[in-house]
Length: 96
View 1: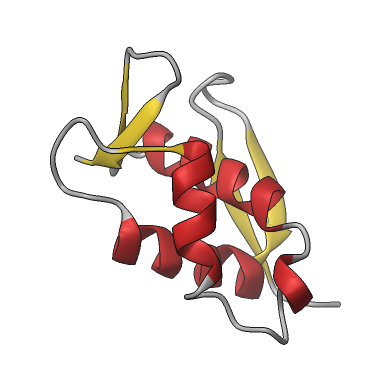
View 2 (view 1 turned 30 degrees about the vertical axis):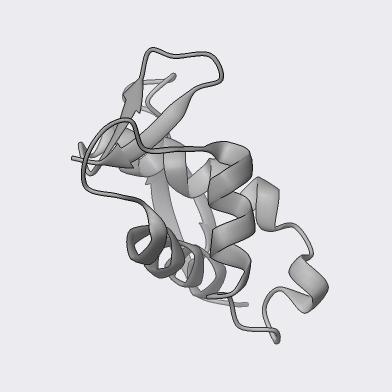
């Protein structure tokens, strides 16, 4: 059984879910490498495109499931106060 990591969701305070640790950490590293530190930040679509270049092919072949993992990590990092969501349309994100 692969290693798991508990993640939070800013939309469901107090709830955690266990996900694959290797994929989580790869996406987290990619997001922290590409998300700007200041507003206005990046849209989810922009972040996904930028993150693809930082993801290991072995975990994300041809970018498979990168969008799902981006959202998972984004919600967890928001809950932890590492990523900030701007009240824009479309939503934009940057590091805290």
